[in-house]
Amino acid sequence: MIIGRTVKRVAALGIAGALALTVAACSTPEAPVEEQGPVEIRMTWWGGDSRHEVTNAAIDAFEAEHPNITVVRDFGGFDGYIDKVTTQYAGKNSPDVIQLYNDVLREFSSRGQLFDLNEAVEAGNLSLDGWPQDVIDMNTIDGSLNALTFGVSTHAFVFDEVKSAEFGVEVPEAGYTWDDLADYANAISAASGGATYGVTDLSQGYQVFEVWAKQQGEEFMDADGLAFKQDTLEDFWQYWADLRAAGGATSPDITTEYFGTPYDAVIAGIASSTFMFANQYAGVQASMPNTLAIERMPSEEKNPGQYLRAAMNIAVSSQSKHPQEAAMLVDFLLNSEAANEILGIDRGLPTNGNVVETATANVDEITARANAIIESVRESGSPAPVPAPTGAAAVNTLFQEFAQQVQFGQKSVKDAASEFIAQAKSELG
Image (cartoon, rainbow, N blue to C red; front, top):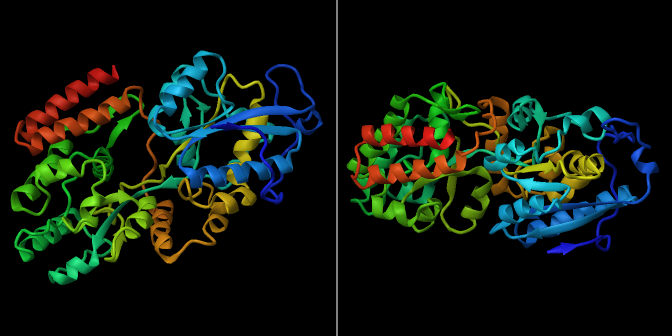
């Protein structure tokens, strides 16, 4: 859906930190932004109705602050979103401000499609005050700040407290290890007579392996490609194979049924614990009567592997005729208390720690529990990885495919790990 300037629903609110009024030009000086004539920019994003509502309201507030700038809004669902944006680029008609996700950031950057936001920082139209350096680095490719993170989340683990109590098994507490998780899962299975699995099999979850690898001082992928030892992947897949054999983790057919949404197996009572992202916690808890305990991932106490993960990114197109005004919109949405009071945590917790309190002022107790996990990672987490190389999405799919072959006994752990690495390297060039 594309709309122009909407009827103002939100009174203009003060921006946290004054925006500078000058614009950096590529070669010749320009007049200050507010002294120029009317400017029209376009922003595109995906989401549901609630996201569209708050985003439009925040843009209304921006327009009230900057009456010379009109923001045309282009929004809809996720299906076909990247194809649509890619087509718009091909037609030299890309949006000025674009919501992206991390897996395609390097791909867009490699085609020269993203404006270097460092230019807006230098011009005073974009502030990085309150931004963790590793998150800035996560969006920097070849020295160019190609995007900023439009909200962060992190990995988390949840446990059904009611089922655990029913079977007389204590829920692991903060500081628990991977061995503790296995003991818990096997105890649930044994106490329930095999009626309930203790954990969903997460061997196909590259996001889970990513944490495991970081805890070993390695990375799933860095800018050059795969960045872990084969032994590390073998240990990960063997861990889950042992849990399946003991009955603690879900069987392959059940794992496949709940592929992509393992928390649905917990909602259905089939398993009593699983992985999710912290920002999903409130929605899952609202879907079931049993209380879910939420913790960081196993073995985080000694060697953290969790990091502030981009829920999504926001970038400015290199095709924009008004990149500085577009950057001003980015600055407003990410850094102003006015916008974050409206946006809340729809896209995850704000990356800028200075506006977290404003964005979370009205959250309920359940959401606060998830936010506490994210904040703990902000304080004591692992550095975020650099943008993944082109081909990363295909590698993620390969990871899932080879893990499933191990689950169904079609390949040994060692053979699957070796073949996955070979094919992944081929995909990454």
